[in-house]
View 1: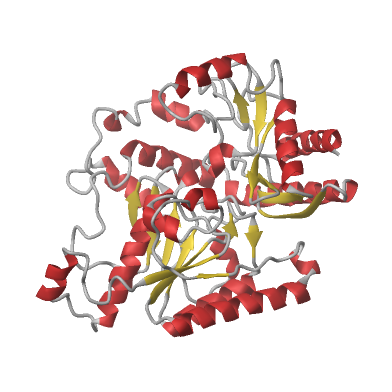
View 2: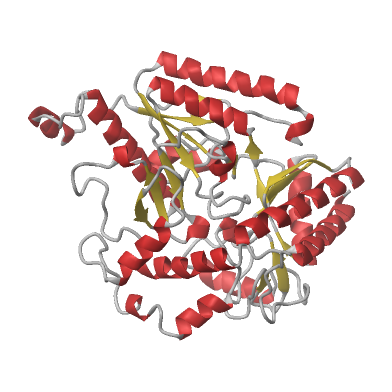
Length: 465
């Protein structure tokens, strides 16, 4: 019989003492704003008092958190296993200095690498660690371009002319290489990743971009099993658009795709779509990069979201970050770069976050949190469907995989009003796309949290109808 994770002394409910953000948070914002742009900050969180799935803010308000620092909190706040490891000295080796991991890593780093290897996607045994999701995507792009050019040269190394011309950004054939991405995608804010990002103009305005192609992503209706005919037609149209893009340009080295578009409205396609996409790319010799920065580490009820697609051939690259604490990408053995220093930087990740990740992965395995999240997600989605039926004039398109769920409001203004109202009631939630409310709770989110979250969301919807 399955049991749900329990965090000792976790709050039993929410407690709102002031408006959120309250006066203490606003005073901190005023100080902060003198030096950094603090306008985006929801509240200032008390890092010591927050516990499990609950935030305590600088004003003493206690909120249930289903936003998770934009999907980046894996096992809740101040999990006893992490605190015990910290207090027991397990991370002391990482406290004295930050090493250049590609030059002189501490011996403990090898233990961490072996721990990460245990969750490698099937068929992708090798990986690079970096710090952030954007870095993960940038370096996956680099690895794809390197592999593509090596294959184009028949496995040969570059020429002296290639080396000379690369120094003036004029290596033959390279500047024409492209990454294909989908409308609504978000892959990061650095220059290469931003060129593949298509979700919001505010990310891209006034920033130079590569002239890379874009194709539509299926605007499926939910639940998927009730709209099979319409969705199949949408997915076939998008696959044809990919085919047309590949036909039009032989310099597309890779396609990058999110299992669920985290910033682009929580859109997702069927496993059949992704299987067909994989087959198409494989037949054309175009690499497949699956961006699991937001979906990875168990949030969808499998450790990697793409596991649920039933691929017969693994992707070429899978990026990760957020709940994994580090950034990085896994890759197939044949895509290993023969030369050193080509995929490299000073830090190659953060040893402290890697040490924390080793503990987190142990907790996930011991407490069977991936299977737990699958069960909890089913309850959350059922509750969202019930709310949608109760408020059909306000809510629609409830959807989700695991606890990676979302629901649409009738328009952007209503969505923003609901997110604002529900925060005042004690639920920290976030938006996605132009009208979606997204759920990104930690893996310790349980049935008791689901009920509370749904009650708070229902109360907020009632206030804005």
